[in-house]
Length: 312
Image (cartoon, rainbow, N blue to C red; front, side):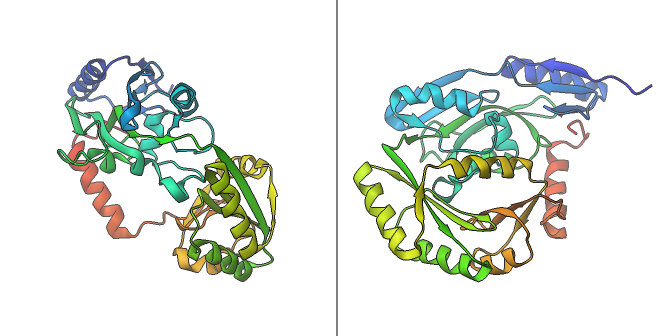
């Protein structure tokens, strides 16, 4: 009979440290928020907003806080975490998988919004880097290193985040695209214009979606300028919900040179594409986009952080 995993619901950084130190001493394997280890760690109880400095546009939260819950709390101060991956993931999951959504165009992915982090390494060591202000550069940048680490370097416990104001207005222009070359031409016109869209996606096939946010008059002016460049009509934003569902259901992620949108689309039947980021979410699995040198380097880093292979 296969062994049954032990579920550990941790509530503090010190409890995490004790758990991992004990697992390392006993030679037990640990997985974070997923099956695979003899011990499966849940961060559901690490769900506190520890600090919110509205004047500095920063917050410190525990890893189990979910994005929508955080933004509901921040809304009272007219602020938000400008991160919109599909679903309602935890902050820890956003960092571990470097998640993002359409707002990545303007605000970046999780790694761009994190300014500090506290983690527990596989042997129980507690480590912190960064700080509570955007320009803090103290220590090694563990936050960037842990982005995309998939829980193999350590367990993220607390995260310091950069926030942004909630926009007064948000409007979306949708322009039809006939083929890959047309999509590239229209997208390039938007990217080269003196505009500041929050999102520029191709929802393939058929549409280029551009979202503008900010003061109502500025958004109106930008929407009109974009329409003059690429045509199309304003919609109610419902297309973003459909794109979120498609991204959530995607089984693969293709990377491409942002200047070669047409080439990327030419081989795809359907995709949700972050134009400037050079990322296409597709319904079928794809090979690991990293080259062998990147894979080997990632494994060396993992081995340095977890030489016993505690985290799986």
